Length: 188
Ligand SMILES: Cc1cc2nc3c(=O)[nH]c(=O)nc-3n(C[C@H](O)[C@H](O)[C@H](O)COP(=O)(O)O)c2cc1C
Image (cartoon, rainbow, N blue to C red):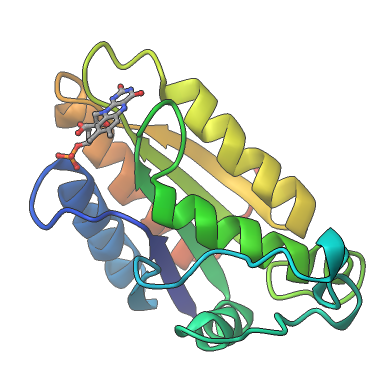
């Protein structure tokens, strides 16, 4: 099983990084081949064609530069996905949001057929700071991306400074179970 972790975390070290490592460890221990893909250098959608670009019908970006096409292909190849971000302004990080926006355009129509994310078990993880209040809006934004692209949410994980002791364990276990083939909706 190929387990791809997609992140737009600009920070090396820190809590988001630590949670990403836990997810990687869990997936590996479950027998998956794991890769972390950083979408930080991929540029945003150029909103071509007066907003009605060919992406919507051709399932590919007309400006497939900055590694966008490669990452889209990697997602298609993967069996399992995780999307993880620090919470910025109650949302995903800017780089992850930009990538997700661009990918959604290419995958929306494809989600009805054989899209890169169609039916894929996907773990959503968000890492807030401060009061932790903005966790839900970030996870909701990620969930909407999944709804638009056909990905299936396996679980929602929120980790902050004071719950990290037990939530990192949850993140590890979620990835472990996914790698072992457990799916959303199954009783274990
Ligand atoms: C620009 C920016 C905006 C942020 N916005 C929020 C926010 O809306 N809610 C929140 O709980 N934390 C917010 N944070 C804090 C991060 O989520 C916090 O750093 C989090 O613990 C991620 O940990 P890490 O940076 O160590 O990976 C923000 C941080 C930055 C840099």
